[in-house]
Image (tube, rainbow, N blue to C red; front, side, top):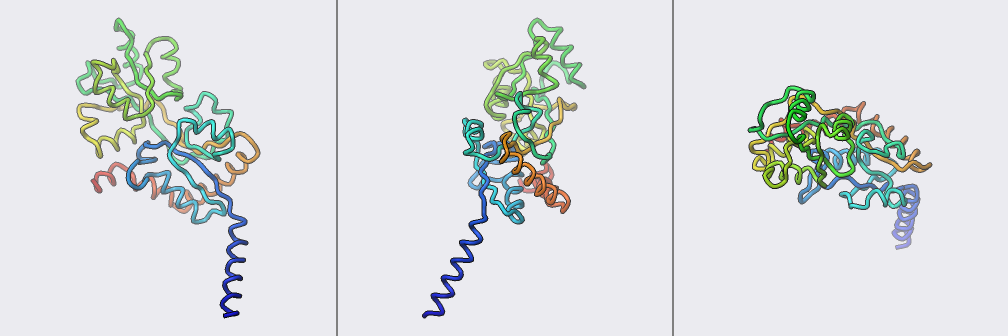
Length: 263
């Protein structure tokens, strides 16, 4: 009995010693930004899968849940350690530390297939917009900055209407008679995912053959000492995933061809 107690006590000491060095990094990601995060019974997507892969070799535990509306406030207060975004989308991007890119996000324009014409470039679309009595109304995300479109919005060459989600933007485009939305700027990956998984939502819609812009998808950290340390540590883990091919494999799992195969 004494040997059993000794063995039990020893195991508890070892566990306590191990967990005393464990540090939990708490974060948040968009609730539904496929294929990066996909809402369902089990949260899926590139981000959840990547965090699991990072935790296999990390001294810290990366734990993340879907965004709350006040996630930026929680990040500023130190209740969250990281978020996901792109520095190029944020007006105050210089106020944060950013990781190396996880993947590239190519934003395109989505329009109705019965639009008056197919545009081969952004310049063509802008010329068409300016020739009209009222500029084209483009749906975008609240608090997002679109570098190539901002000057056009500022000069009223295009008009902008904000929404909280890609899904709401697509629904507004389908109901243009009431919303007035004539185009949506969104990730090509998100549109492709919706087209495969929810074809009823994207029926009659087409995406532009040109990219509006391409942005890196990244971890976002607060601009303080802890944020800098966590950014450097995260970059090291990302580098390991990239060099081993694990990150490419995770991203490939959610490619359009794989989604089609599993559909």
